[in-house]
Amino acid sequence: MDKWIEFFSPFFSSPDEAKAFVEPLEALDVEDRKHPAKIMMHQTQRLISLADDLPIIRKGRESLQLLFLLICAENVAKMHDNFDDDGQSKAYVVKFFNQFVEDDDKGILETSFTTHDLNPLTLEEIAKTLYSVRCDVVHEGQYWGFNFHDGKTPILNTEPDVIVYITLNEFRRIIGRGCIRAIQTYAGRRAQ
Image (cartoon, rainbow, N blue to C red):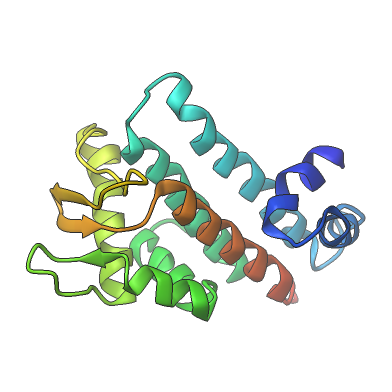
């Protein structure tokens, strides 16, 4: 249980809060209707950790890291909805941003992505834009064309044509907080 608490602690105001989040989830038995929340917690840690580890093998390839963050968002949104079919990936990524990202974080995102003409993107446009980057990585093998703010300067991307004013780490925290919200609001499996 320590690895879950250690991973989630930065998303809470104290390790005790993280422990209070993790412990009841870890106690869920596979027969419990809320057991998928435990799986969502595990998947969040696994997928975000994969994104964190990618610079070791492909430094500076933030598209790859974004891929795993969006896989996490999609996976959690599908599990929250008890969706176990194929497809609907883009719809579930958009749903994650609309339903699970906190209002303050939505505001941050909506001021962090603009067109080249400096017109802000809506939350849905941001989700679809990032999803298009994910598709370029998955379907075209293009994992070098998109970057987040580097901590000093906004980054002008050309495919897609957006300027990004948020760092990858800030975006990662938003995804993590959204996953926590999804896990906390999960109602359980539908009756069979």
